[in-house]
Every structure is written in structure tokens, then in C-alpha cells.
Image 1 (cartoon, chains in turn brown, cyan):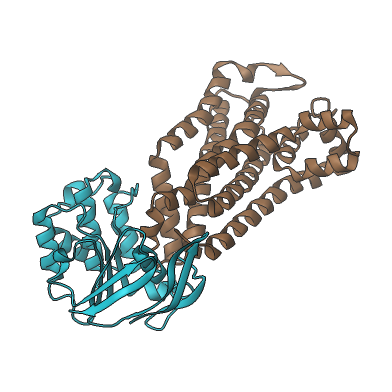
Image 2: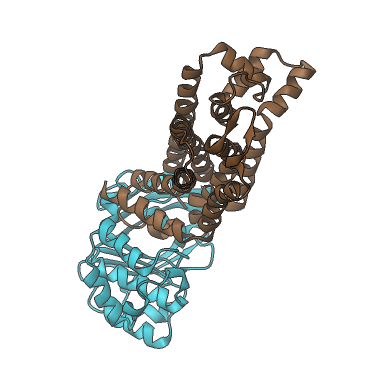
Length: 275
Length: 212
């Protein structure tokens, strides 16, 4: 246990010093700052305004950029260490593979999750300071959704990292997965429905399997009771499942996906040659 | 004691270790030699439990280095050929070793001092930002501080200047007692005074194994 904490702590410290972390934090913090400067909180679109609108815009951009940020910064975590012989040295000490792997997962999770949530907290504090009404329900929902989305993509990234020998290949796979999942949110699904090559059930199943689509639908579901901005698949999902159940599913499912991939990655890590 | 029995390790169609059997016992101080690609590093990595053998076995003090890696590695110190670009600061790296291998910081500082390495003024510096020689000195200091019964050096003096090499050999004098010292080297003359056994490998096989 002490080794697990140590690995997580050292990975966290190492990541925080890295340039990518600075860029990562600046992007999410910068988004919030930009929204305030642009006066998003003073505008009203489709019935929502103030901090709610700001958080909605933030989350919509986060859907796109958070997965790729997590994938490209994490996917090299183990494969990169293997590539440049760090793993060969660090694992020559009596540390179990379980502690090493899960320590890295925990350390990296904290690194990728905290800046995204901190950016929202800053928005809430600044909003409160300006006298805006705080949308607590949305804030807590988004904190949970971001936790779930971070878990899913972190798990996928560690899975890739465990079996890929070169970090360049790992980056390529990560980018492909991001593009693939991004394509299967409503835009591509509408095209599929229009072409009628697949039946509706299959399209809905694909949508429900995609953590990015689940995140998107859950994030917007609190805002748009008429479901006008959600797209046909989102409409279908919320028409079939109750909103509460769907919100629960949208948090639990990506966490399960993340854990499953991380666990598969761990199995591969222990069964394959380490260096 | 290290017992390698009928060990074969392949990478794709390349046979890196070809059914080799060899034992290293207490008080053995071995120069492991051979051309590039002879299988020396693969043998060392198999002892450290990094590779899953295609056939055969490796036992270190009767334990499997893959299944019982922690118990095996408690008794092994390892210095790689090239210091890896570890991003941790020296302080953090020492902390990692203190906690994971239960090594006292003072012991590392002691050997670093003996190797003429000024740790204190570089303690917050990232390991990879040190010069090649400084990195190697630190890794050697760590390996000696571990007080392990098996010490494996993979070309440990490659980055060291003549003075540092002398310090290294001086610190190793007398360390052979009750230990296994395994030097992977291309230059026997450098470790000649320290070794009592010479193993030569080629094409994944042990070609000669002589007591000196």
C-alpha cells in the first residue's frame, strides 16, 4: 500500500511539473476566463442564462477536448517508460506490478481530473462573487460526469499503453479512438439513420456504448426539456429511459468502462514482457 | 544463488537465449562477456523477471523472479548500461528507493560522497538533467547502498571518467564476500581484478565458462 501511494504521489508530482500539464490547465482555466470575458453569463440562449449557460458551454467543449487530452497525455505513460528504459530501472526495485500500475493510474487520474474540476470551481466562485445564482444541481452533475468521462478515457489510455511497445504507435491509436468515438456522436448517427443502412435499435445501442455520447446527452438533458438541441438519438434515449436513470447510467457506465479497460491493461502488463 | 535451467527466449523469430543453463553461486564475481546481440542483456533481464521465458526456468534463491518478484528483487541491485531519462528529481528518486527497497537515505548519500558526487546541491534537480557521469555515479551509489546479495552491473563504467572508475573499483573491493557480483562488460581488463569467473556468450549460448 505504501508503494501504491508513493507511485501515485511521484507520478502526480512529475506530471504537475510537465509542460503538457501547464498547457492542459491553461486550456481549461482559459476557457472559463474566456467565457467570463466574452460575457457568456450575461447572455440568454434557449431559456438558460448566467452560470448555467457558462457551464453548459464549458461542458460542450470539454466533451470534445477532454478525451483527446487524456488520451495523448496518458497513453505514453507506460509505453513511454518502456520505450526509454525507465521501466527497466524503476522495476528493478522490489515493487509489485500491481502497485506500480495502479499507482500510475491513480496519480494520472488526479492529474487529469483536478484541473477540469478546478476550472468549474473557479467559475462558481467568480460567479458567486458577481452575484450570480449558483446552479448547484448542474455543478454536481458535471463534477460526476467529468469524473466518469475521465475514468473512461484514462482506462482506455492505460489499456493502450500496456500493450503498445512504441509511444508513437500508442499516440496513433489514441487519436484514432478519439476520432472514431467523436464520429459516433449524433452527427454520424443521423447520417446513418438517414441512409437507413442500420435499424434504429442498432444506432441507439451504438450511441449508448459510446461514453462521449452518453456524456453529451446527460450534460444537456438538464437544460433542454423540449429536447430541441439534442439530436434524434438523444431524443430517442430520453424518450425511452427516465432522466434520473439515464443520469445514473451516464455516470456509472463510463466508470465501469474505464475500470474494465484499466484492468485489462493491467492483465496485459503482467502477462507480457516488461521491457 | 541464481539457477538458470534450459532457458530459451525468443523475440519473434530471433532466438536471444538458446536453451542455456548456468548457475551463479555465492562468492562468484563474474565477468559476463560477448558481442552485441549475444544474449547478455536478455539473460540479465530474465534474472530480474522482466521476460517470460519460452521454455526453461530461472530461480533466484529458489524463487521465481516473475511470480515472486518482490522477494527476489529485495536481494538484487541493478545498474543499467545507460541511465534512463527519469524525470523525478534526485530527492524524489531517493525517496522512491527509500520506500520501495527500504534503503536508508544516509547510505545513498554516503556512497555518493565516496563516488565524489555532490548530491546536496543538486537534490532538487531532475535526474535526467544531470550529466551522464553524475547519473551513473548516483545509480552506482544506490546499488551499493542497497547492500544486496546479488549486484548486477551492465557496463557500469561506460560514462565514468578514469578517476570515477577508480572510485568505483575501490568501493567494490571486498564486496565479493558472500555475494554474487555480475558484470556485463566488453572490457575484461577493467574488471579483471574484481572477478573470479569469466563467462563468454555468443548467439544466445554460453560458449565458455571459466574460473579465474
